[in-house]
Amino acid sequence: MKKTILFLLAAAALVSCSNKQEMPEADNRYAVMTVGTSPSELKTSYPATIKGVQDVEIRPKVSGFITKIYVSEGQSVSRGQVLFTVDSEQYRQQVNAAQEAVNAAQQGVVAAQEGVKTAEQNVLSSEQQVNVIQANINTAELTLQNVRRQYEQKILGSDYQLRQAENNLKSLQAQLGSAKSQLQAARVAVGSAKAQVGTSQAQVGQARAQLAAARDNLSFCSVTSPANGVIGMIPLKVGALVGPSMTIPFTTVSDISRMNVYFAMNEKQLLSMTRSGGVGDAISKFPLVTLKLADGTDYTRSGRVDAIGGVIDQTTGAVQVRATFENDGRVLRSGGSGQILVPVFNSGAILVPQAATTEIQDKIFVYVVGKDNKVQSREIKVQPQHDGKNFVVTDGLKVGERIVIEGVQNLKNGTEIKPITPEESKKIRENAQKEMKEGKIM
Image (cartoon, rainbow, N blue to C red; front, side, top):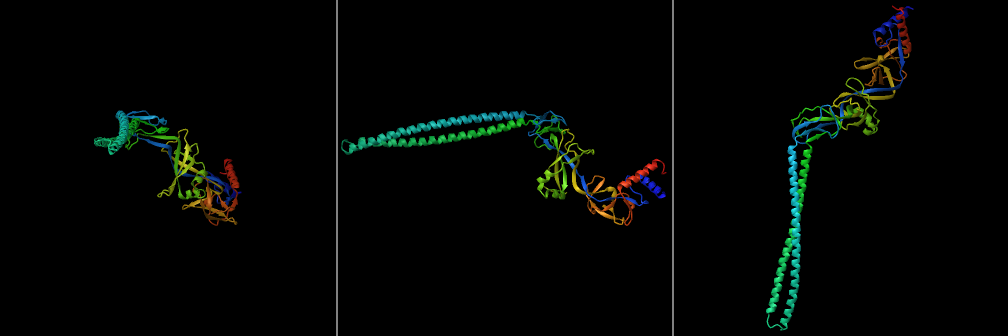
C-alpha cells in the first residue's frame, strides 16, 4: 500500500510539473509501444516569395512633361485604361508635317504617271513616223527599180531621173534611221518615267511610314494600362519630365487576380521527383500546396505547382518552383512573403512520439526494450519534417520492436523495466489525479 501511495504521489507531481506524460522511476513501470506502420501526412515548409501573375513596369514610349495623372496608388485599373498623359503638342506638329510629306509624295506619283503617259504617246508618234517613212521607202524602191529599167532600156534620154530616184531613196532611208533613233529614245523615256513612278511610290511609302510613326508617338502621349491589375506607388507628379530611358518607372501595374508563389527545392528533391517521368510528370503528380502567410495563418485556398525551373542555381544548389493561387479576395499582394507547405504522404510510415526520444549532439535516440525487459539506447534517423508530435523514422527501428514512450530521461542502458501499455499508464495518472482531488494524497 505504501509503495502505491509513493507511486501516486510521484505521478501527481510529474503531471503538475511537466508537459510530458512521464512515468515515475521508483515504480519501475514504463509505458511501452510496439513499433508498427501507419499512414502519415507531414508538411515540408519552404520560404516563399509572392508575385502577381503580371508585374508590369509602366514607362512612357515618348519624352515629355506629364500633363495629367488619372489614377491613384492602390487603385484597380482595367486593360487599356488611361493612366497619365504626356504633353502632345510637338507630336501633333510631327503628324501634320508627316501628312504634308505624304501629300507631296502622292503629287509626285501623279506627276510621274503623267510623265509615263507623255512618254508612251511619244513612242506611239515615233512608231507611226517610222511606219510612214518605211512605206515611203518601199514606194521609192519601186520607183527606182522602174526608172533604172527604163534607163537601161534607153527609154530615158538621160540619167537625171535615175539619180533623182536614187537620192530620194537615200533621203528616205536617212529619215528612217533618224525616226528609229527617236523611237528608241522615246522608249527609253518611257522606262525612265516608269522608274520615276516607282521612286515616287517608294517616297509615298516612306512618307506614310513616317506618318504612322508620328501618329504612334502621338498616341503614346496617352499612357494606358497593359493589363487588369492594381496600381503601385507613383513617385512622379504632374510636370515631371519622363521618357523611354527613365530609370524609375512611372508606376507598376500588378495583375493580382492570380498569384505566383516562388520557392526553392534542392537538387536531391528535384531528382527524386523527376527521375521516373520527367518534369511534366512531376508537375502533374505534385500535390496541392498550402501557403502560410506572414502572420502565421494559412491562406484559405490551396495552390497548384505549375512550373519547375530548368536551371539549378550553382551557389545554392536549388531550383525555383512556382505555385499559382487564386486571389479572388485580393488578400495576397505582389512582393509579399510566406511559406509554402508541401504535403508528404507515406502509407507505411514508422511513427514514434517525440516524447519517446532524446536528442544528443543533433542525434536522436530511443530506448528499445529487449526480451528480458532491459532497455538499450539506439540512434534513429528521422525525416526533417514533422507535425510537432511525432517523428517519421527512416532508419534504426523495425516493425515489431518495442520502445519506451514515457519517462525516457529517467532511463539508462541496461535498466530493467516493467512494461505497461499506454492505456494502463493513462489510467494510473487519472487515478492519481482523482485521489489528489479527493484529498487521499497530500
